[in-house]
Length: 439
Image 1 (cartoon, one colour):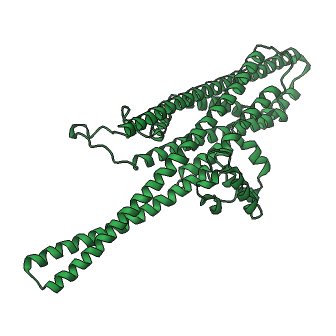
Image 2 (image 1 turned 90 degrees about the vertical axis):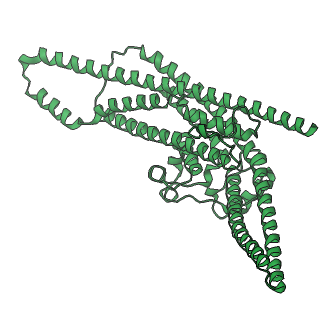
Image 3 (image 1 turned 180 degrees about the vertical axis):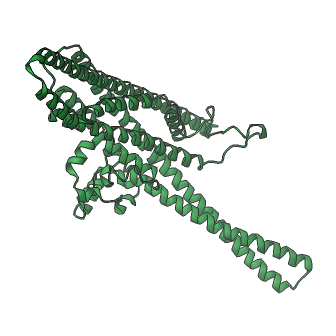
């Protein structure tokens, strides 16, 4: 059991790198209460929070006080508002020194070579909001411009005073200039968003994929060795009587609570992970003009880019990532089911311990000397039942570790394929752009 426990600690530590990439120390949440019941929380925050729960839960529970847990999401705006210059490790270190005095709990140096992921998402959101405001304002100017153009045409048709026509014409020219400026502003903001998307967000997602590959590779090794250990221990028969005392019941209850927290956190992590990728892919779909569809094919959903189209690699990456999450090829349900079976078995160990103990004590006191043979037989049955219960628990735990191994193996395989597909799309895109420049 000590070896299995050590492997669990190593598996948890395998997620520390991804946790640092996502800058989880910038976020403080009530893990048990606020994650499940927070429908308005952004998908990125849910993903980061749930990932921290699954990968680093033990350290959180040991280090966080009740005051820190009760805090809501807090972002360091001074860090999030940085430009792409935040990629420099020296700059990051200076930032840490500047804001470290205010509240060190919320500060962590960037773990990504390509810069702060949360800062990139925050600045993309700010630029998108500015783009929305510019388009909204330009639409109002454009509407006024169209109205004045119609008015000018009517004045010409009616042959009104030349002075009045010149006045309207001046207004139209001014509005036309404002529309041109608005179009240039929208174009500049759009190019800025594309620059951040291609030069910052895309490398960060690639780094995240690589970090997840390393994480699942380490977890696969840990869970596989755990499975081998418990499988070998399953064949070792012990003749020692299994104690069914208070210590056993407390251990069973503690294990049940840990499995319950792990199961719920795992489901939250999977859901938040999928929501995170869905949000990225949905945003990318809004960045392009969807191709015209044939009327006969309107019912079929067409996503950009099509498989045969030459598109920026980030589109292919997020499209395939989302397809992986929606394919249900990961044995998520099987793993959760095996954990639930262990919890049901443990529940029977501490549901009614007091009544069972009182009943056993009363029966043992009421027996007389003439029932010694029957008492010995009952004791043997109790010992046999205890051994069977332990063997049943061992069998269920073996199944859980087997499912954990298979889940880690499937995740590693999918992320390696995702990385390979991205590299192919990147090379094709670079080759296509080079050929286009030559033409």
